[in-house]
Image 1 (cartoon, rainbow, N blue to C red):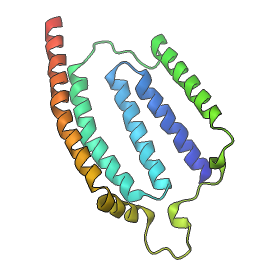
Image 2 (image 1 turned 30 degrees about the vertical axis):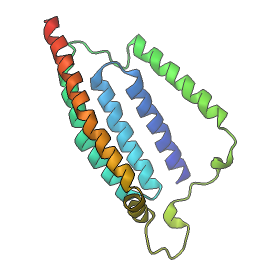
Image 3 (image 1 turned 90 degrees about the horizontal axis):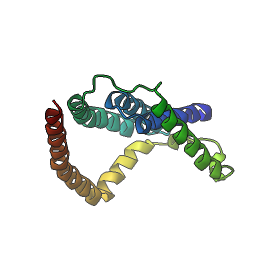
Image 4 (image 1 turned 180 degrees about the vertical axis):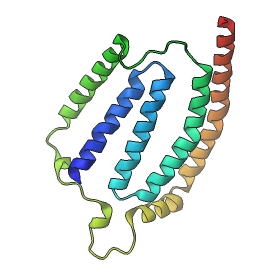
Length: 173
């Protein structure tokens, strides 16, 4: 299980590097899907299948629709792929940065075995993610309201930026 989770974390880092290093939205969307899927797989491996299912459905169902709409407005006839020089340079810089940061954390208490929350007790009646969801809604109600307001305030800004992008595309033609 530890090696599988290590492989999932490496895939998550590579997916995030694919998002950060790509200037075209087409290939960055693929990196976002990989990062979301692998992140949900890490949550499942940590004992949170319900939370990962909710995250996967909300993220891919909601946020990627907006991303696909903005990618359609910013369509390029010849997008830069992962094989171009500028993208490979960005990938190399990000990989070196991740290796340097990971090297500074080497040798700590977190290098032990990977234990899932449900495996801590022999006769566990509740799953770890179900009690975590209950805690999130009981003690995290204020944060839920704040996040809802932030999302509500984000939509006019997003729509304004999309309309400005559309106007700039029309002025180019």
